[in-house]
Image 1 (cartoon, rainbow, N blue to C red):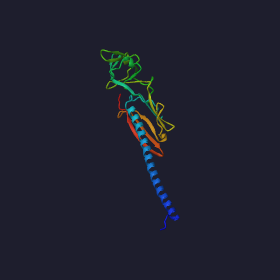
Image 2: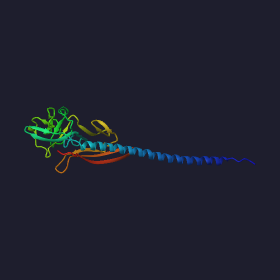
Image 3: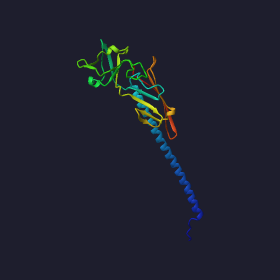
Image 4: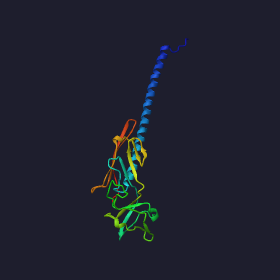
Length: 240
């Protein structure tokens, strides 16, 4: 009996068919990997966008109301975080006030400022806003658990309907900006480098008789020729 092997034609056909099958499998695998890595990049982009929006929203909502010093159309929003808050009462020439922090002392408050009924948006605090009182000379009453701004009532203009006040640190201005390098920064530190600045806006609209102040933003995040646009109005929840 004669042994029969592959003919040359059969061998060539087998190689060609095997190559076609392997090429198809490779293309299928490549498409799968592209889809996987594409979904990973999209997830990272969405996660980064949610982080930026959540961080900005939380800080704005708990800012001192109506004091947003950034110039209009500057691409920036700046504000002062609330350190503490409470109620006040005018007593002759003085202003007596309470804070929510039961561990607060006159020493811990001396580097802070207190504001009552801020109604002047887009203003630099130093010398530009009524009813801002330095607490450098604040005194305390240990037996009655309240603090006093001596002679503070002399310069008090108007007042808060609910007798509320806010304590903040004038040296701790927070500023978010859109920059020319497709960045969004917080006090000069980059928090995202995937912003399409030309299609993004960031601004503050002052409060009026119908609503609180609102930070309006449109942010476009882009990666690998894919982009997602977020539009949001963030309301400053505190009122004078």
